[in-house]
Image (cartoon, rainbow, N blue to C red):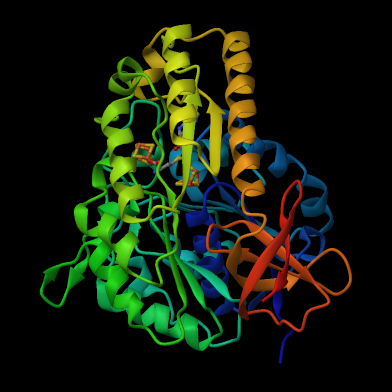
Length: 439
Ligand code: SAH
Ligand code: SF4
Ligand code: F3S
């Protein structure tokens, strides 16, 4: 038997890319590839890229430049670019970086095996189509090997919302939901392989409307179906849009035991003027009322969000409204970004905010978010949480897992294995994790 070929995949961007990278590695597994952790001994290097901000996209070109030496030493080395930069700039990548052999978009990577074969013939392969066929159906069945206790599962892709700053509707295409029965089958397979927690993924996961046995199913319906899967202990979902939080989903947060009390619900800004210009179609007030209803259903839910500062025409007053909103919500986690101009999006045409002003606002917002984050984490001391253990910690004898609120929790010298779920009393709160004891 011939030596397996080695594949090195580097993943940028969101969780959907993490899931896609797994599926691409599996697809190339059929071509005799096994994964390697280093680009140095790879026969194929695949960068799974993100186009969301300028820095993310530029990173790809600098990373590619670093492979020049490797390719000179090993002319058979194939270099591929996948993901959202591939979709947005496919032809340009080939032009700017001649060492690239293959460019594949997020909707066509089921065609990777044929594309890889083409590169072995010495040809270049480019595919950034949005094909009619369902790529997940075309991909081979997933392997049966044992895996860690947590997994992502993409249930919905693409976005029809067209926020004025965002490239996703262009790189990922229109909203499409996978049929419920296939998701449930995939979840059952994951559970058989050792998975106990599944995070359902979609660019707008709560807009899910996949075919079910009695017509389209909503995300809440899908969660209730997954709730019946024996051996699956925890369900999460991300990312959701405020406009798609329907009553059934809010209610599920109060009544579905397996649905974890954590919700990532990006609002982007606290100013109605800015929200309008962002084309977000919700107001700060409607968002706050929504959170009130969610907290009525599940009082201990931990909220998480995304913010953009320095969006075109954002004034000090607009920014203050964002700070006010953050003060009111108190997020357990929040991600804030300086607005990045994306060519082809409507906001790129608007008067831009001075970079220094945006930097200063970002620092202020991040300081507030960090303070809240820390307060919420510290308030866990003395409480008992449930922890799904995943891996050994940094110190010997330590095991680390995640609480239902997604805080990292470690215990020392306890008899726990990866995949175990235990009740843990929290004793200490450190910079990035909580420490506790089994109860
Ligand atoms: N579908 C998700 C988010 C996708 S992108 C949602 O609607 O929430 C993840 C985050 O990146 C966004 O929530 C936003 O805060 C940020 N983002 C997107 N485009 C950006 C841009 N042009 N500049 C800065 N941040 C951006
Ligand atoms: Fe981008 Fe807005 Fe769609 Fe989220 S909802 S992916 S921010 S366009
Ligand atoms: Fe980035 Fe594409 Fe995800 S642009 S955030 S990898 S959908």
